[in-house]
Image (cartoon, rainbow, N blue to C red; front, side, top):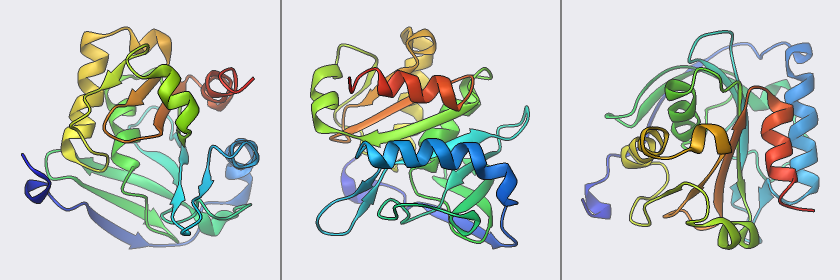
Length: 198
């Protein structure tokens, strides 16, 4: 399917009160570390990149940084939202909070839906790491763009066909600079990324 055939990302946003600040302390700490490393941030044109999420309990729901927050140095409870439902085939999700979820949330949802052990997911942008890892770790096909149903399906396929569950990192082949790490918690997901920067 060509670009013109992709289903537009559909976010049903239920505007509601923020997630309590005390529930965001740990995710915010790791998000700030990633920002300082330049793995979450914004390009010179102002477009932000990267996001971080944590699973809510044993569900496939998760807390994630909101849309267009990559360019902000530090976040507060106004910048996080809960993803409470998603549908890969329709390229849609429902979120609840003071801000809309990123269109990249479906990539996080794909990890949570196929790997019950994943408690946190990090999506970063870094060209050097991307070029070093592409095809050396599980990699989605180059013809799959981010924010598409095909990307979510591509991530799910990696869990069936590769050792990504144990490697805890994947490269988005069609999303230049895009890398996803995950782990049982934020520390494990972060350490996987951090080990590639030193």
